[in-house]
Amino acid sequence: VSPLHWALREINAFYDLLNGVYTDYSFDFGFVAKEVAALKNMAAHIPNPQKTILIADRCYGTYGTMLALREKGIHFLLRTKDIVSNGILASYGLPNRELDMDISKRLTYHRGKNYGTAEYAFVSHTGSGVDFSSVDEIPISFRVVRFEVSPGKWECLLTDLPRELFTTREIV
Image (cartoon, rainbow, N blue to C red; front, side, top):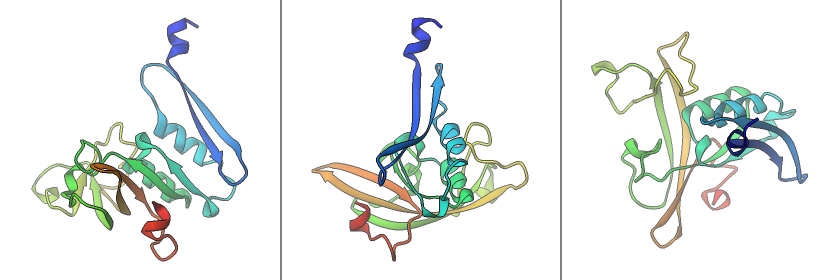
């Protein structure tokens, strides 16, 4: 293996915060990172998905990740780019302030007048991790929690944690 190949190595790992141990890992080699695919693969090995809250950084905050975790029954808390960036929340027109709000969309790979309303979110059918092989649209719901970490610096989280059990303050 060439030195450049080793330099392009990335590790994806699951760490159990309560027990202080790594529970799974995946190595990724090459120029294109495959974080979401690695996460989906490792999520299949979680022994008690209903008792798991997966916490992940920015590159995992995608529709594909949320759908895969929902399918496995795993709760999630995913850090994502702020609303003023080019990330998943950029097109939502969210207010530039602290918030904890529910979002419901219908994901589709179609473009056109039937899908051009605020009810829909366009997702590429290639490379997004969303499986449109048997449907034209997929409903998705999640919470967006946005909070200021220092003056003018914001963090955004995507989660499916129930508000009744996890308040905004607890999530922050």
